[in-house]
Image: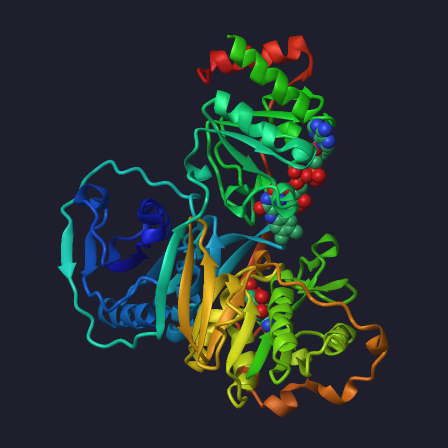
Length: 313
Length: 264
Ligand SMILES: Cc1cc2nc3c(=O)[nH]c(=O)nc-3n(C[C@H](O)[C@H](O)[C@H](O)COP(=O)(O)OP(=O)(O)OC[C@H]3O[C@@H](n4cnc5c(N)ncnc54)[C@H](O)[C@@H]3O)c2cc1C
Ligand SMILES: Nc1ncnc2c1ncn2[C@@H]1O[C@H](COP(=O)(O)O)[C@@H](O)[C@H]1O
């Protein structure tokens, strides 16, 4: 029986659990057991039900941001359980932890995986390369464990059966602590997460001149505002709402693209979106061919007109 | 304090070329730029030195020799010393091999702090800083948007990190590796007029594997644990779009679409 370990990061618990789908795609051809690693966290069993086992560590000396301690702990677990693969979400911490751990275990690491291709002979981990222009299929050397970080919100796993969950309370023997203290934690100004939005009204270069107007339309649609990198680089909005390769992957039910060209790096962040409306002065902009409706014209004019219409009705 | 900045010159993504047969990136003849995150790292170090001139800054980069003029430009901006780690044998190194090469050079150096970028534009893995951290036994932090200048001491730094949801302030023991992000917005100073064509060759070293003495199995493609085996073009599903004008009719069309789909 093969074992696989998924690191459950408190930064994105739900998506960490969804990485069970990645484990399935890598190991489904054989019998395997999934282990989730929970450190100093309390999560209801119903969310964890699809794991075979949870390695539950409660030790206040291990801080969630202490890569040194975390690496030592997972190395110890690796020695004990001989995982065939270690899957880590590509969160802020995950992206620091995984390379350190891979170096410790002397194995290759593939970052930011978005797709998995598996056949009898080979396992290809696919990630965007060259700024998202192409996708690269990467193989790691035969040594175990296979290690990867997975781009957030790309894989989804539906819990359809609740297994008998085995809780393993584990106390690591030996780990070093990093000399680092968290002094303060402030919420970013933003109160929403575009990855969870049902409707996104998104602005780009063609909406630069009056980005504020977009909020007005969003309010009327009970929607949230997102943006292309053009807006972020121009300082009009925070990076938290950037959609795309170097921003977030979003899956709203409706995406309204206002003055966004649809560069490949932007489109890389659009996943399973049922409905796209784009407004562009150029009806041949790349985003238009992905859209259900293309409105040819000025983005801000459109925003005002549609907001008006919504107000009247 | 002695500060080391690890920087990478990256192909300007606009003119990236790729060898589809060998599956390697072709860096020759591509216009190079200083990776934006790394520019912030050097800029922070220079700002520090501006306040306290006793700080010493060394820039280290691994890459082709063609980066020399760029590195010289950094030396003309008040960086004290630079090393270019360059050897044909290093070509094709993945992040694992690259970290080994850089760490091999760093392990005999004295320093109080290593500054890097968080991501490189081309590799974009963010692996190098934490892997070097592991090899040198140092702590490391990515996504730094601010280093508190007033509280930057030989044994401790106070830093701000953005993880998407929160702004986190940490006190971190030095030596450590601090990885900045472009949003930190530290800007490289201009080269002062009288330094425009300053000869800086005595402050620039070019280091090959002759000096480093790494085994061939440890470096380049051979020393790499990951391998690009395929590349795919991205295909997006095209839709049967309806094109409307931005007039009353068009707005009505959009409105009834929203209505039909239950969005309003
Ligand atoms: C490493 C890397 C990573 C990147 N990551 C991202 C990312 O995560 N997200 C991202 O978005 N981009 C990313 N980019 C940038 C990307 O390549 C594009 O530059 C960016 O998406 C362009 O934004 P835009 O379409 O809003 O602006 P522009 O390219 O300026 O396009 C503006 C569009 O609006 C139209 N327009 C102009 N005026 C009007 C008007 N008055 N009314 C209506 N339409 C108008 C134009 O016809 C055009 O289609 C990345 C680039 C690199 C190199
Ligand atoms: N070849 C290199 N030479 C020096 N520093 C590098 C090199 N590659 C990466 N780095 C550093 O590591 C950071 C992250 O790069 P990467 O792991 O490629 O995303 C960069 O911002 C640099 O500071």
